[in-house]
Image (tube, rainbow, N blue to C red):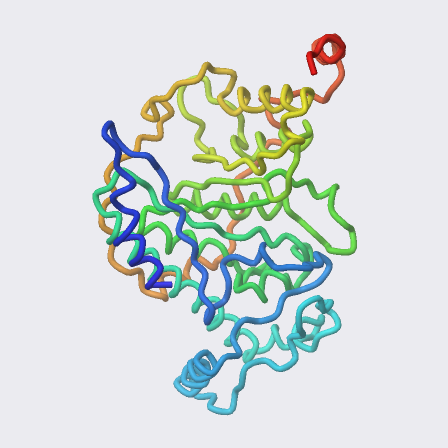
Length: 366
């Protein structure tokens, strides 16, 4: 991964700058490594959202690292878990995640702390290198934290834990990540912002709404910007309204920028379905609502979001200080619905649009 980052320095940095400014305003850094817990697990094939992932720590390097950490802690006999299951297991079928499982013991807590810390250390190292490369450029760094929302409404949060997010009801697994990002002035990009709990399988004990609220609150408490993206292709009003609620959870502030807001949003995906006339009309309304019904303005300074030259990362934050952020705090309150709704469908405007589409299709020249 460090080699990949250095390639950017050698090949792509010059492409950032054009005659009149910069082609890009945000550089997205993927914090992914073959020997570390994964920041990104959304790309797994045949993913069953009722089940868990496999722990990513059984190669010889991480085995040796864990054994040394255990020895220094006075537990030379401790080994990596052999009862945490494999891909697509149910949490309750494993000795590690069952209701009285290993994850609740001192050994389990030691392992999960070590496991999640490896993710923190790796992410911090990669972002530090990226910061050196883009130092002085008018760009911001960003990285994605995956929305592991299944099994969120259980005591064990098994899917999150196997992905490296040590998040429990009495331990915040996301604020330490946000605190680490803060020293690099990095944006926390989160997914599943279009999802509602009511749309998920009851068997998966899923909580995307609460998870988004927790992660965004973690970012805002650590004074960093948060961004979002939808996890699945959605072209309906319900999804758009959910995105708008998460984008400004306390609504529009007519006297200035909202206290709580997403810095940006990535919309997925550009498909033929999106350009169907009715869906595209709804999408146009959605885009306008993201701008609070204001006309387009190309000057980011007028969005209270100026792009300034990237400064050098702050000094490394001690692990003890990062782990202080595991203390759970109540998330910021979110309004139940957005104040910038795209509507619920129907009405005279939509009826007129359908009539226009019908007339257009009749007279359309093939």
